[in-house]
Image 1: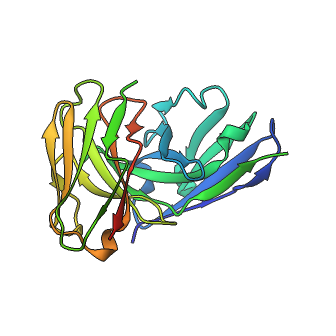
Image 2: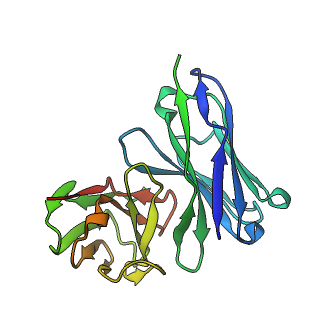
Amino acid sequence: EVQLVESGGGLVQPGGSLRLSCAASGFTFSTYSMNWVRQAPGKGLEWISYISSTSSTIYYADSVKGRFTISRDNAKNSLYLQMNTLRAEDTAVYYCARYFGSTYSLDYWGQGTLVTVSS
Amino acid sequence: DIQMTQSPSSLSASVGDRVTITCRASQSISSFLNWYQQKPGKAPKVLIYAASSLQSGVPSRFSGSGSGTDFTLTISSLQPEDLATYYCQQSYSTPWTFGQGTKVEIK
């Protein structure tokens, strides 16, 4: 069974940093591209970052470019999101999601981890 | 960036009704269009990929159609468990973008 489990969320002050993790199991993690998608409270979904299976290709949404860094460790079956210079508008539930290239869709999602940026 | 516009933003329908949600892209995205269902307090789940292909395990009452800029998600016979918000998403080019969502309520 495919499982994605995010962790690392919490309360952080504006300007602060946080590192999110996503532990993957039930599939060959090293062969799949991965993504982070966030959802502000009561709002819609926003894709924020993509990383290919070998980390050779990375994309970011403009809203996080230069502040967030996506990475992965295939030996540990883990995906990460380093978030720096956090703003109030970064408050959201952050989901990791697997990209299935055959269908061009996000076919599995984690349960999400809440990040709250507030003083 | 490609803008995705869904309509309506919300709807209320009775069990057994046929429900249609539309999604329009600001430019042609061929068939690179996915539909997701998000139940309250849960993560999204893919229903339809490539505009019209049903994801494995998804009930056949869900269907998708369209190409280019105009797309439709149809629920042929609404069930109580279909209470959710539905999002379209384009995977044609980054940044991948989602519609604003359509909240489906049961009368």
